[in-house]
Amino acid sequence: MDYTIVMYQYPLGTHLTHETVKKLKNIKPHFICFPEYFFVNKKLGNHTQTQHNQALQLKRMQILSKELDAVVIGGTMPELNGNVLHNTTFVFHSGNMLGFYRKQNLFFAEEGKITPGNTHVIFNAYGVRFSVLICADVFKDDNFIALKELGAQIIFIPTFSLMRNETVEEKFKRDNDIFVRGAQLANAILVKVCGVKSDYKNFLQARSLIASPEGILYRVEPHQEDRSMLIVNTISI
Image 1: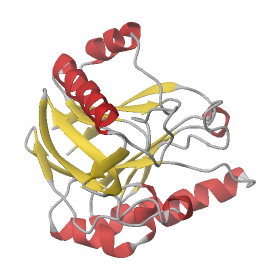
Image 2: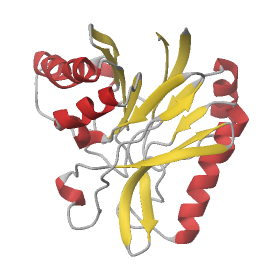
Image 3: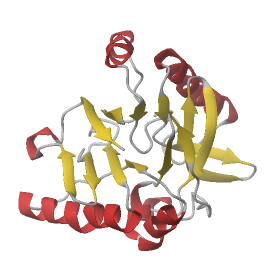
Image 4: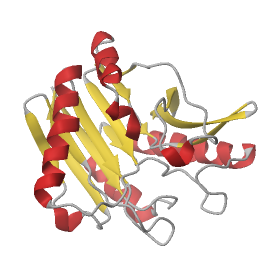
């Protein structure tokens, strides 16, 4: 069966406009995935959270999933859990929370601020088993192997991608070495979604892509790495 996926390649901490929501309603996606640290309050920053802001961000995801009648993979946000802070993806379907996944492998800037998770999660919608990894989780083969054992068919990967001084050939080689290889290990389709650089985070490159065990199915072109885009793709499961 074919499933429509929207990859929301936009700057972090921004709000969806009414015009964008209208476009999304016309697209009628099954899934929409946001970048890592998309649902943040820029005044608080990436590694701080309040209970009030957390509730507001979750409400944004819930309402969007209901309006679109779709699955929202909410990028990530800082999650207060008692006295600790996680980097967490919340997943909603048509206004209902399906659950959440906490990043397990931290980026150096998160160490000492973010507490890693320790559990993989499988979600179900439209008869599809899907899961989430977050950014640096892709550097651990065990994560892909664990999701294969759990039967994931699609793995969404909200990502915070730092700008690098590298050639196009080096970029594409890295895509194959990490994401095509990861798709092979997991025997699943990988959907990586990145944020665009902005005044808030001016050191990002948006290298969103879709990979299967057979190869790259889609990726933004090098000249599109600074471009805000609603990327629409259809995948078959």
